[in-house]
Image (cartoon, rainbow, N blue to C red):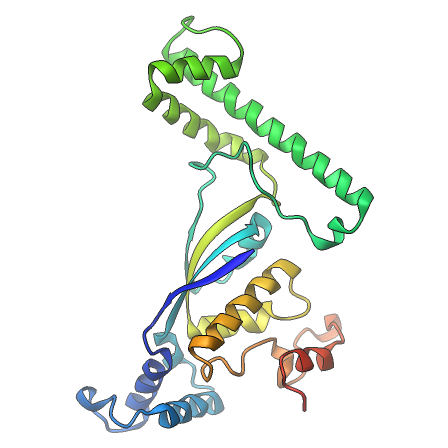
Amino acid sequence: MKVTLLTHTPNPEQTVAMAAKLCYSPSGIEDIREGLDEEKTSSFIDMLASLGHASPTEHAYFTFGIEGISRACSHQLVRHRIASYSQQSQRYVDGTRFDFVTPPEIAKNEKALAAYEKALKVEADAYKKIRDALAVGYINEKCPDKYSGTDEEIINAYKADDKKSCNAFIKKANEDARFILPNASTTKIVCTFNARSLQNFFAHRCCNRAQWEIREVAEQMLLQCLEVAPHLFKNCGPSCLFGPCPEGNMCCGKQKEMRQKYGREK
């Protein structure tokens, strides 16, 4: 897994402070930056947090590149709807040699790991057979009785005659062959959140009950946000850091450990 903060709003904390200043002072747009040194900026951000006034934080945006995560993880990520996503397409990217994520609990269980890897190989083999069979079908529709041999031989022969058309057929075949690909297959995604949406994301996905993979994504994102906007994200993390666990009867029971992890011991 690799998480990279690709870009963000320049001076994100000052941007939020300017929005807050406009709400609470008679300042005009032309002088909205005046006096917003680091101390005053931090003061505005603290005031917003104390009032529960979160809308000014929506003016700061952060864009991440995430790769090496499973499709199972990305399906959870895109449930956070107040964000923008661009994900690697399984229609256009060949899946015959897909990489995959192995959950830690499976990796440390020899019997489970053997079954897991065997199943992934079966799926990879099935993908290629389905993709090639579909591509050959398209080739035979266009050029009946012209090519013979195995599916792979027919595809290679046709590609030598008409590479552009052959590639188009393969991409068309990928569209249906991808249905065989597992949740374990890796993906790449670019996502953009505003700071308010990120704060909500961290509250849910840094939680000890979050699935292990997306929790790791959230923790890496938070660390990088803290580097560029430490005051804006200083209170971020699972919801239990400053109050009771919102999970109720499903609480993990590790509130003390989580507070120690995030340096929030009381």
